[in-house]
Every structure is written in structure tokens, then in C-alpha cells.
Length: 265
Ligand SMILES: Nc1ncnc2c1ncn2[C@@H]1O[C@H](COP(=O)(O)OP(=O)(O)O)[C@@H](O)[C@H]1O
Ligand SMILES: [Mg+2]
Image 1 (tube, rainbow, N blue to C red):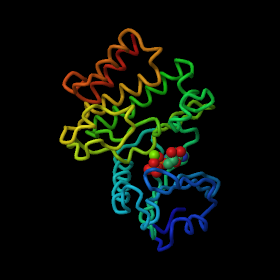
Image 2: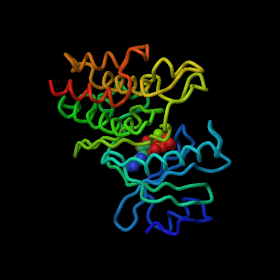
Image 3: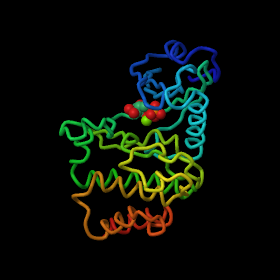
Image 4: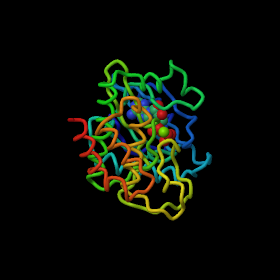
């Protein structure tokens, strides 16, 4: 269905011929341009780096590099909560990544809407605690898989969470900044939402490793679950969010094991 793997057309023309574009994501901070496309009765999410002349923050070559990293990630790790990558098509604007469409609403909303009880952010936060915990278990499960393979999280925040309030399925999207191992912070303030970021993500030259990812997991639990955190689960999360990486769990699998143990209590 997604052949040929090569086209000299811009993505939109190509997709228009293959099926019906029903959604457009063209106002992203990333500079990427993505589409919801219906083809043969199925829905897909097609991600591109956008127009080569468009240079908001990252230039086109840098955006394409991140998409190649997303391809690497999707081809290396498969999980039911990660929309499957079905095809990669080279176009006039670089690669088009064809993923399964994930139903649901983005949990992350602009800051100004975060206090609105009608926002997906607040509706997610006020889910029944067993549903919320199940969603956090899914996030932990994905990070156990990725962490076990050495991946280090980058730019994980609530804008990576798509939640279907009808089926209660959670999908994790946009993990394009994850890296296959530790790295040095070369930016000072790195990409990301400061609510989820560890202190070392603000310090140029600092080591960014899975202990950084552990912090982000802990913040995720605090942001969505603070009122419900007590007992052993609270201890796990407090340790994960320690400002000093040496005081946190040593790796994602270690954090995930501690989380699961505390969940059983
Ligand atoms: N697999 C998917 N299914 C449905 N919608 C998606 C999917 N992946 C992303 N989206 C939607 O598209 C938006 C942009 O995608 P994202 O991967 O975050 O791109 P960007 O790199 O531009 O931030 C997301 O905020 C989300 O609303
Ligand atoms: Mg995004």
C-alpha cells in the first residue's frame, strides 16, 4: 500500500493521491509537518520534516536527522503502546514516516489551558486512580523495554502522551529525541518541558544518562498522581526525583522494578 518507497513529490501531493488527508499538524515548535491520512479504510499518522526552507529553530537537516533517529527507535523496539512504523517513504521534503494512527487526545496542553477542568490535562489528572495508575504502568513498561536496551530519554513530557478516554488506552508518541546511550549536555538548557526535566538538563557539560530518565519518570508520576502517592510508591518517586543523580535509582530497569514492587504492596 505504501509503495513506492521513493517519490519526488512534496509529501502533501503524494498523500493526496494515496488517500484522504483528514488532519494536519503544521504549527509545531519542532518545525515538522505531519498528517492524519486515511488509506484503504485505515488511518495513519505521517510525519515529515516540513519544507526545506522553513527554519524555525532546527534547520531541515537537523529535523531529518531526528526523523532518522525515530526510525531507528521504531525499528529496534516494539511495544503495544508505541504506534507501529509501517513505512518510510523518501519525498521531496525528506523522509515520510508512516505510523499507525493512535486514537485519543494529547494529555499535554498549552500552559494557559492547564488549569481548565475541561482540558485533556485535567481530565487525565482526575481519572479514577486505578485508571491513572494503569496509564503510569504503561509508561513504566515502555521505559523498562527502552531502558533495558540502553536508551536514554530525551524531551519526554505530557505532549508525548495520547490518551483515549473511551477505551482507556495510552499511546506514547514523539520519542524522537531518545538516544542509544549516555551523552553530554551540549546545550545548557536542553530541549524539553522544564516540568519534566532533571537539574543536569540545564547544565552544560553535565552527564545525561538513564538516571536523568529516572528523574523524568518520577516527575511524570508527581505531576499526574501527587495526591494519590503514599507509602512505598511515594518513596520510589521521591528517590527518582532526587536532585543528585547519584541518589536516584541507577537505571530505568532499576526504577521500573522498584515501581512494580511498590505497586504490589
Ligand atoms: N501516531 C499518532 N496518531 C495520532 N496522532 C498523533 C500520532 N503521533 C503524533 N500525533 C499527533 O500529532 C502531533 C505532532 O506529532 P509529534 O510526533 O509530536 O511531532 P513534532 O515532532 O512535530 O512535535 C502530536 O502532538 C499529536 O497530537
Ligand atoms: Mg511533539
